[in-house]
Image (cartoon, rainbow, N blue to C red):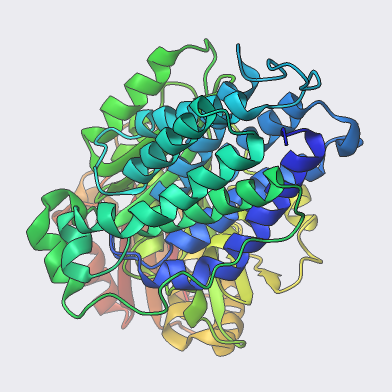
Length: 523
């Protein structure tokens, strides 16, 4: 059988369902490149984005197979999560290119035009394997990349032997299963943890779904072959000892970059720039759109490094703070913060938030925030918008199930709300954040005329602002939050702490605001 629109659509839906079933067990064996237990979820969210793009096609049953594959790859690229999702999206892009390029569609006798025959499937899997490698600045053997090669070689062998599309896809999937344990054991981190590569497991679910669709089936693949166990004790230490690259940075940064002059040079520049500020670098692109991923200790450096085009959909997470999705209880709350300041992203993420950073080139949208809500991996999510997204965009989220949008309209109130949320936690934290944001009295000290006053001059301005705020009829307050453009050096912090002590307030000083004023908030 050859792949037509119906079979490709069945493949998409089967892969979506299969990864939805399997993501918890894949998350459980995720130890490389970072043991953050999210590879299965990231792969599922990536495929989910591709499936939504296919579902959104007009009359999808009548759309040419090439257009369906292109929509799948493009949707997956934009929706990609994590290193594993970026690799999978590039694998899909390579599959689409190989299937629809020269020699891929309708080339054999008896194969209808617009259908991908046996040779086309083999070409597509080979193209997918090559493309996945190109996504990474530092490809690692013994991982999903090696498995993709094994799958592609088996498909090529089956096509050379005269197999039809069903046989080619089935042999590719079987070879992947046979190779999984062997290739994983060749990687030092995976061998010490006694687990298969999580990314390879996710890809195998997708290849299994392809084999079923090529055989005319419309069901999800069986996933009970996946291990139902966690890594061996000490796997994180084994990861650190085996390779420095596996340690990674503290933060994950992902964003989309739109190239104003499309060309491969942009992808190369992004990979080189991100490799200089972090690791686990993955960059994929299509039609002038690039999706970049890096683990780094400095999110602002990573975001700045991507200023080679129009940046949007910037998401920052702290890898060791967020809970794994399967650990979330029915009453748990996550938090999403929207900010226009890359320099504040690390602080908000360390507090446990998924952070959406609005870059100057493009506005933040409700779609960007909804993506971050998914990444928060909690049944309920508090959204703290600051001043980085318009009220009209936020209004479209008011009826989103499980989402509470807070009325915090500047970065000082956003910081006050996050501190209250973290201190109280859960549903009480949401209530505390709303009260804190509403109570906070904020003053702005304009420093737009230059790089900002020195510590002494700033201290005098802060003292004057605090004195005015605590003299208001409202309660005196318990905390002082100061948000400073640029770096908050030790002298500035010391002066603010002395001011807070004089007024009996608990101080918090945040540097890195992209604004043109020092914000002083008393709550």
